[in-house]
Amino acid sequence: MTVWVEGFLVVLVLTNLWLLGSSRLLSCIAAVSVQGVLMGLLPLVIRIDAPLWRLLLQAGASLGLKGIIFPILLLRAVRSVDARREVEPLVGYSASLLIGVVLLVVSLYTGLRLPIPGGATPVLLVPAALFTALTGLFVIVGRRSAIVQALAYLAMENGIAAFGMALAEQEPLLVEMGTLLDAFVAVFVMGITIFHINREFDHIDSERLSSLKDTPQ
Amino acid sequence: MGTAGISVLQLALSLVLAPLVPGIANRVKAVVAGRRGQPLLQAYHDIAKLLLKGSVYSRTTTWVFRAGPALGCAAAMVALAVLPWGADASLLSFEGDLILFAGLFGLMRFLTILSALDTGSAFEGMGASREAWFSALAEPALLLALASLAGKAQSLSLAAVLAGPGIGGGRGAAVLLAAGAVFIVFLSENARIPVDDPATHLELTMIHEVMVLDHSGVDLAYIQYGSTLKLWALGGLIVGILRPRTGQWMADCAIGLGGMLCVGIATGALESFIARLRLARVPQLLVAGGAMAALALALSLVR
Image (cartoon, rainbow over all chains, first blue to last red; front, side, top):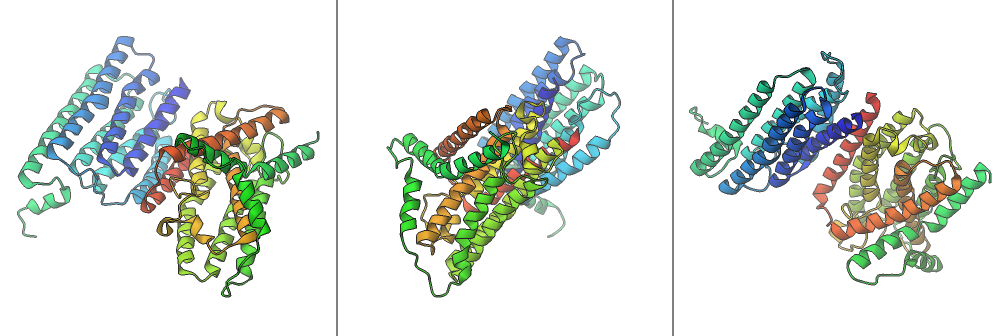
């Protein structure tokens, strides 16, 4: 089982690097979708002591939402606003990847030192979760396209969910489902908002949204 | 057969067979494209033809220009002498030869860059600058990948590193990542397709090719032979990282030769199916390779 967990976590880290390095919107959506599938399968390989129906329900719900429905929603948003296919970076791709390596080192350093209640968590889980959350945060800051920011928000949510898997020995099903519902609503609302922003202002460039402030520029 | 005999045999095999690998890659490309392609032994013919020719030297060049190709070829030969094929030590094996192995490629590159700059041509200077820029990104990836393997093997000698548990040893992820990073370095260092097109003669996009434009005759033969040796050395490193562990030197030899065949085929197949990256995108590929190597190092240090 540990081999599987390690493999999954390494692929999770690689999807983050993929998200950081890719310049195409569709490629970013694919990265987050793969991440969603991984997040769906992770509880299956990590926690074996919960009842099977619960694990399957949780895995199915999170895989279906994060791996399939969210990407489809975002793809629809891309199509409906006729978004540019480039992610419009504020920080270049190579620099993003280098920053990603730094974030990876930081999350490994902190993740391996954090005291985690309950001993049975896989070694790499907390660093990988931290790295995913930090990557999401960085991409939100470092890209201008609103759709990529929504994607990065999803990556951040994935990181937090993975962190939750490490922290909670017996996380209630209700909490798990609640987070999923939250994320679902958030992505849904973001899709609609992006559409409306685009219709109103003809672009979804978050840099230029700040000019909507009341203070004269 | 004694250990020394085995390593001499392996070194001789790699020195003789190295020009075959580009031939295999070219043949795969030709077959995929539906052509018959050049003979498998084309590289041997080219080198033999060049060895029979005389050289022309520009009046602006100095001894640096003449020394570069021969010394670069010698550096590649030493790198092959350092690289072991199996659990047996190579001819030149000592604690820390890992650094020498990576350093020899640095030396080779340095000599190529120097002799390119020595021609005084702005065009070759441009190629030299690109080479320096890309290798500055490729070298950390190679060193980090080697460091991750060394961290697993708890040794700085290539023989011990490549004799480690390998891909079946439970830490497959780190080994695979390191091999992936080395493969990216392999493509970049040997001017293969996503980074540089070995067949291109479009001046503005060439990298390696542009630096050797002024060499001719024997010098060019040294450069071409040296580049096939470099291909063999880095390909042999990938094979060494990934190959299954055996105990017998015969099996090691067979795996080494089969692995190099696979490297040639994989290179040819990759070149048939993907296009060259834009020049500005190449550093990104190399940084991604470096990130993979860093992840491999982190994985090997965690436990």
